[in-house]
Length: 175
Image (cartoon, rainbow, N blue to C red; front, side, top):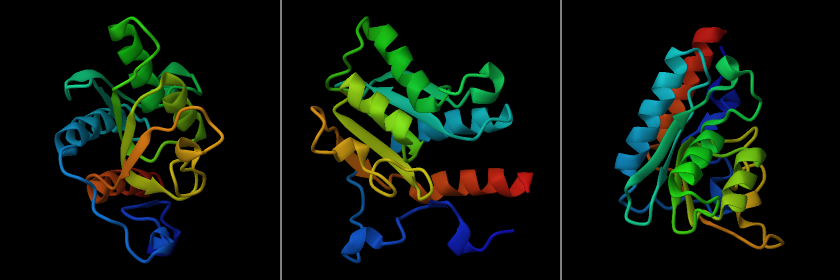
């Protein structure tokens, strides 16, 4: 079993955002994150890495939800975020998801951060920090890269401890 210092999933980044303090997330996304956590739990029950994602419309209604599906589908792009964004685009009838919010249990990887940028979501909300592969501020920061033509708002840390605990328990059971 790894030590806490070796855990790749955390409620806050280890550098504590360089200023010594990570502000708490704004209220209002807990309910959506609980839906994403339910998707992550369903993914875990199927033997998938427990990551879940939800896309909210402008009014906060759920457009789409998904959990990881890489193992079952054999698709390397079968991440929860990509699946939820695809379903939201299909529900809207357009790839442009302006005004929408992507809520995900784990900090998006580079692929998923790129998909969020390309889909033009207005905001990305995530729970646990992924210090080994996160691309929303911990390892890379694709979402706020000034060289890109679209930069969604990023809100981190929503139900972070619950999101991190689900992932940590999943991987601990496989060691």
